[in-house]
Amino acid sequence: MIIIIILLILFIYSLFEYRNIQIKKISSEDFGLKETKNLKLVYLSDIQYDLYGHFTQKRLMQKIVETINNLNPDLIIIGGDIIHHRHSDVFDYLKKLNSPIIAILGNHDYKDIDKVLESYHDLNIKVLINETYQFKGITFIGLDDLRHGAPKLPEYNKEDYNILLIHEPDDFESYAYDHQFNISLAGHLHGGQVTFFGKYAPILPTNYKQKYRYGFIKINNNTLYVSSGLGGFVFFLPLRFFAKPEIIVLDI
Image (cartoon, rainbow, N blue to C red; front, side):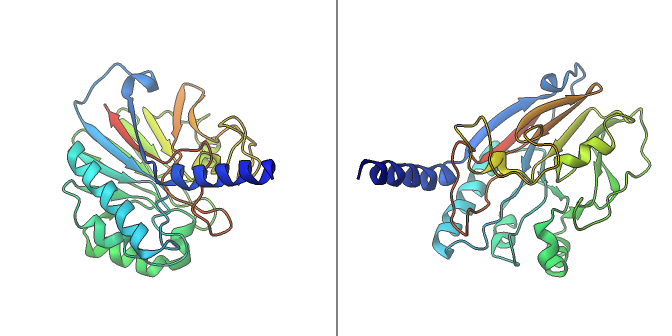
């Protein structure tokens, strides 16, 4: 009976944590940079709410929209996996955001890729697929998804202030040793989704064990931040355990 009660408590907590979206503030200093651009960026990854009940999805997306609009960022970056399996109402909420948006693709986006790209186009959201995008003195380098796309680093000016956007952090291994970026951002692993108190994730879709599970990873003077993202599922259940969902605020 005690074991059942404990498991029930853990299950309830996991449901709560999934809904308890955090604001994670990082800055250019966390990437070892001294140069400042006086810009505020918001980074979102792995929303994936389309398996959710409609009411809960509405509440969470409304919370995200209100939070971001209150932050008033200069630019919003969607780091892939805006859907889980199919096109959803999430795009209706993107219309309510007051800041310009760019995006890259994740592996789940390819499950309904035509509709995802069509919706991004209709909302005038620039999707970076192996290309660069200039914004207020910054060059964003957005790569295609590692699993279902064909990522290839485009030509870019190494003297620019360059931010690398990849969905799967494993892709960082292909570029970090031979190239230099000011900032690199990734998602995909959801912080492990369900972990042993934030220290170890028993199931992690990566070739590098726990290396890229969450947070800052430094390779060859390149620093990558891997976000825990927002959504994801455990056997179709909206659960997270010591892998808190987050909205990243990056001041540079």
